[in-house]
Length: 75
Image (tube, rainbow, N blue to C red; front, side, top):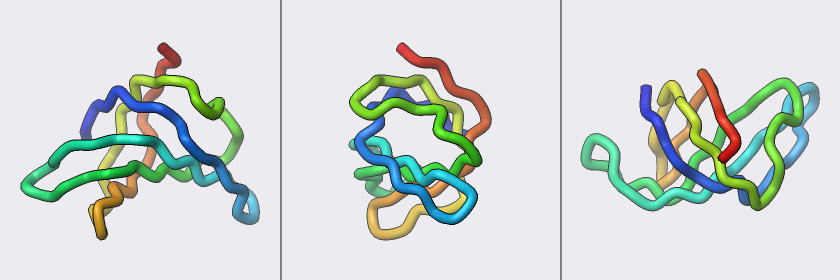
């Protein structure tokens, strides 16, 4: 699990879920991370808003951290 302060930058709908992309610049376990992608069943985030999110890391691939949402708080 990681906790991030980040901004929602895009949203796309795929079948029965939403894929949100968040801005992030940093490193995790030696891997450079430039963005975070989280898939959720409903539209809970607003574009261009800042959030504190707790994410279970599934993978880091080509600078993208893909994870499942544990908790979030709008800042």
